[in-house]
Amino acid sequence: MGAGVSGWRLANAVSKLGQLGVVSGTALDLILVRRLQMGDPGAVVREAIQHFPFIEMGKRIIEKYFIPGGKSADAPFKNIQKYSQKISDELHELAIVGNFVEVFLAKKGHSGKIGINYLEKIQFPLLPSLYGAMLAGVDYILIGAGIPLKIPAVIDALTQHKPVSLKLNVENAPPDANFNLSFNPEKFINEALPELKRPDFFPIVSSFVLAKYLLARSNGRIDGFILENHTAGGHNAPPRGQFNFTSAGEPIYGKKDEIEVEKIKKLGLPFWIAGSYATPLKLNEAVESGAKGIQVGTAFAFSKESGLEEAIKRKLLENAQLNTPRVFTDPLASPTGFPFKVLDFDESLSNKEVYDKRPRVCDLGYLSHPYVKDGGALGFRCPAEPIDDYLAKGGKKEETCGRKCLCNALMANIGLAQTFKNGYTEKTLVTAGDDFVNISRFIKNGAIDYSVKDVIDYLMNKD
Image 1 (tube, rainbow, N blue to C red):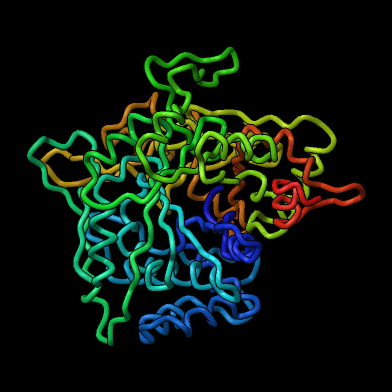
Image 2 (image 1 turned 135 degrees about the vertical axis):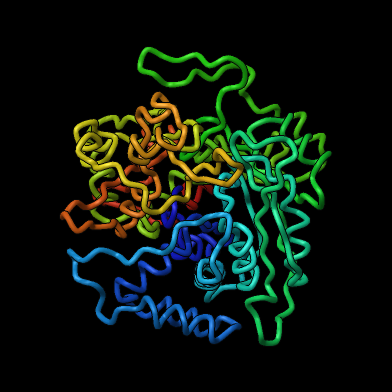
């Protein structure tokens, strides 16, 4: 659903109703410091940090970033450092604490289960992020947008507070290159280490081939799968085989892209199906096919409990009741190169005039691509950054066409938009699954919005 949209309030509400609430693990380090700079309304972040097991780490973050009463509306946020191969201790600490806070708050006040969802494409904060979520007792780890072969052993090692590493995916790296990310919990901890449980691990896959490959090649235990088809929101797997496009420019998915549920079932692990399954009929269909249930994204993303900024949410729900909103599978928008579902919204970067007025800037860098520079050193470039900068780093101009800064847009979606010294404020880019066209089914007569309970009651045939 995007960073902060599936936030702790949403996951908490879902779990209180007996289902599995899942928080987004994307950019929780940045969300943490921006919430503190907004004054931490209700003191929820600072309260969560009081329960963090390593007191001095939490104190350092509050002292540096908390602004009593919040920053002024036209003041820029203080950004965190951009990630690089040599990650600073502060960035590690922000990732640990940010993930702890989100999971802790999601688990507060109930005995239900909580999961956290990461993108394998965003590698730099992943290791300390996993550790922070596990310190808060996360029950499930979900990872998509990549092939997370090495994650099971990482989870096992972090359960014992042991050092971990991951091979960094680097463009144009020679076969013998050795670029790795490392994280050692004991470097940051000088207090008693709490006992950690091992969360279950569910890769998010779009094909039987990938699920089978992960089971055969992963370096540890896989506990189940999320099967996500191409109608789901956010990033989609590219079509298999040769790319073809509609007249509007959307990638065409065919028979090869259908998930072979019967084959998945024979792998013997539990699975859930995602992508336009949020109806009682589709839920029953999924269960009858052998699934444990479904993953619900779009329906929850526009509920009262989601982290989507209220004015945006209200406007989009109004639009949905007045006309047929368009969800466009954009093959260019995401710097990752994956197709990305974009919901048309005049005030957002989906509007070409709004997009053209945005000055290209790359000040966050979560989706930057590591590459090998002349001489063998590691560099970083993003096709959504200023074009001249990208070309100077060896990128190709055609790779910059239509690219949008998801890092900043996703912060704007949740009311944490950056304002620059020249007065420009970052604009939104909202993602939703194809099923958004039916979102009005959750809004009861006379209402202007709906709750998590309304969605679950509808799916369980309780309304």
